[in-house]
Length: 267
Image (cartoon, rainbow, N blue to C red):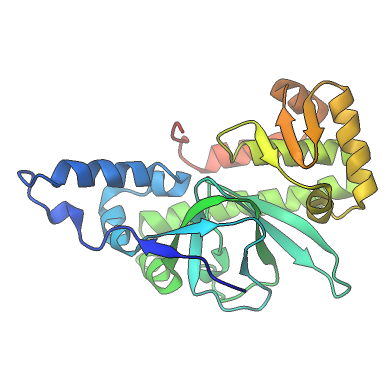
């Protein structure tokens, strides 16, 4: 696995700059823009944000990049901004199924602060974009202060667990058509547009089904006038229609995120 380039964003503490310094305003604007790139970043109080800011690195998250494998010790935790990361469980025969997705609402690597240094799942970028990373030791140190960051991360973890459990229920009891719509809506909630680039094979791997099943489900949804699908490019034409067509699982997950986490910033 090849790591991509990353850059430390803030080599110095901008809060110690003089307000008369010509770079002060620009630095403040830059850190505000950064804070708004991820929901959890946005919700961190200023004192804790000041401690974390010098340790934040920007990183490219290309399609298919593996952030961690089962049993791998995690050196960093990732906060996606424009990318989406899929958490997968892989079987011995090579097949896999998605258990959750993480985008600009959250963090990849919760096992770091939940008492373990590794996990049994696999994290793969399913939609290319950018993100930020922090050394695991730095975030764990902040978490162990038992302050606002700890409470924020624990609430996020509860919401993520809800997504995982609801995904398991959905995959067992609802049609592939409904699962496909749920997956589309969860992805859209984490993107800034109504366009997704995703091959049938990748969607099949995410949902744990055969490619033919994905084709059939996509054609049904397209025939209903809700999406336009061609060569891995999905354009959502009717979001409200998707919400009506999917099962209750999407709303259960969305409601739990809305309940547990502070109001989302406008992107």
